[in-house]
Amino acid sequence: MSTSMWKEIEKNDLIGKLKPLFMNGRLYVDPEDNKIRRVKQVMHVNNPWIFIQQPDWINCGLWHQIYFDQLKIIHSACFSCFKVVVTPKTVKELFQLYDIMLSLDLPSKCGAELRPYVDRLYGGYFYCKDLDNGRQIYDLVKPIVQREIREDIDIILKRGCTEFEQLHGDSSKYEQTEHDSNLERILDENSDIPIQVMTQPEIVKNHVKRMWLAWAYKNKDWTCLEFNDGEDLDDNKPQKPTTYHEPIKDQ
Image 1: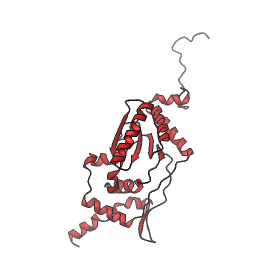
Image 2 (image 1 turned 30 degrees about the vertical axis):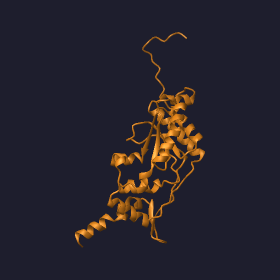
Image 3 (image 1 turned 135 degrees about the vertical axis):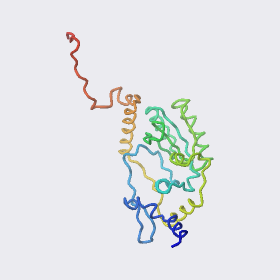
Image 4 (image 1 turned 135 degrees about the horizontal axis):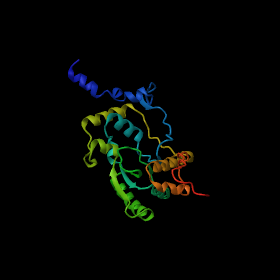
């Protein structure tokens, strides 16, 4: 076997590159049509996000979780993905943003930022189909959020996912190499992983809201106490010791 042949095989070994997902049972090759498929996706109940609407034009389960997480490439469709990002400072503001998102009823989500490489506690994201749509949503959302929450709240329009920027830097300079384009073509031709849109039931949303408040408490965001009549959220807080180093006052 020539060196060039080996390099070509290695470069196009899609199964090898996705081996962790095959090994843990998330992907399989369907013997009916030889397509790579995903095992039925389940709803993650410990997700820190509540989705107002999940966008039905974005296949994050394929483009992010497989193309980016496993292959480290940005799918060509992601180049046109934009998001209006609102940054609440407190959990009280997060709940206010949640109410605004419900009233606007746009593809969006909000929640606690558990990702260690994000330098804020909370976030809200409005999904946009392209740059023009992003600017329209930005112009719609900004005055409402400034009026209902506070005038100096951080609101930006960004491209793609935070993880893309962490690995590839400035999003205005994204481009797809010939190697990335080739892998995308091979996977597109040999897989059938459709967009999955799920609607969170109230029982899941209730759990996520509790996660928000627990996250706020952990990070000393004391606006969380306003959701418990000013009382402490930790029922298991250690009892303070009774002290005797000073005379006990008469009752």
